[in-house]
Amino acid sequence: QVQLVESGGGLVQPGESLRLSCAAPGSIFSISVMAWYRQAPGNQRELVASITSGGSTNYADSVKGRFTISRENPKNTVYLQMNSLKPEDTTVYYCYLKPPGANSVPYWGKGTRVTVST
Image (tube, rainbow, N blue to C red):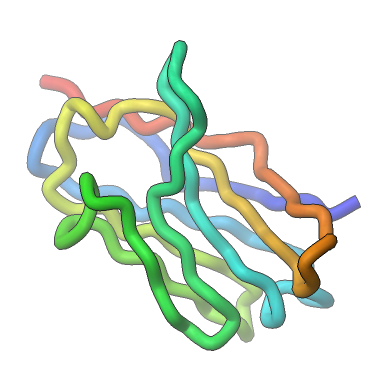
């Protein structure tokens, strides 16, 4: 069983920043696609940002220019730097790991809550 451990969520005011972290097992981290998803109550889980093993990134339109995903392979950790946070960014954020292979099973973290409010 692959365990993903997220941290960094919390309560901030609009315009402030947060950095989420997700630690994964070293045996597969460096070769896997990593991503952050979020899910608001009543909504489907949506992709926020992803990063391949080679460092290519992809972002949801709603976070482009504000969020940055990065990975630090020696530390088996992926980050999501979130700047200029808005109230609509409030929700639970989930770390995602997809090992190589079309039929491989992805893994999810338990989620970390981000609240943007005055």
